[in-house]
Image 1 (cartoon, rainbow, N blue to C red):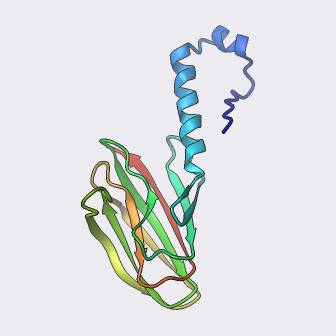
Image 2: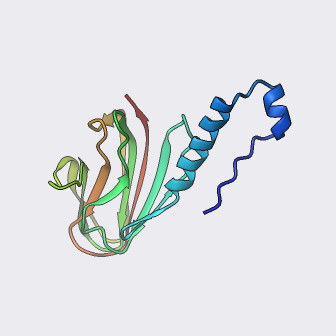
Length: 160
């Protein structure tokens, strides 16, 4: 993977004249790397994240089989995921469960929504007027009752 960091309107020599020290440049590189890593395929779920650092995230997860507990948004050490909106759709009539969980050795999850029953070829939207806060470092995961094409779109932000 090749990673390029472009500072709009600033050449390398101008960066130092404008007061961008190496610490700031390293932070920009880490942000760019984190964004690049968010465009990844995890297990059977293809994730696309249009998140912008500091402004939250919108993740589109699609799969032909959500029957396993699939990570939609990975947890971050000592920070919590806050969910503001959730869209779920399925090609067939199924039930969905949204959870927070470690998926480590125990595989334990805490259900935060569901089961939600969805009719075939429909989309269900949840707008949380007060965001749902997941426990610190917990990933946001979903599962579906039977295999079939589905999509989960999650919007939110990460904070302490």
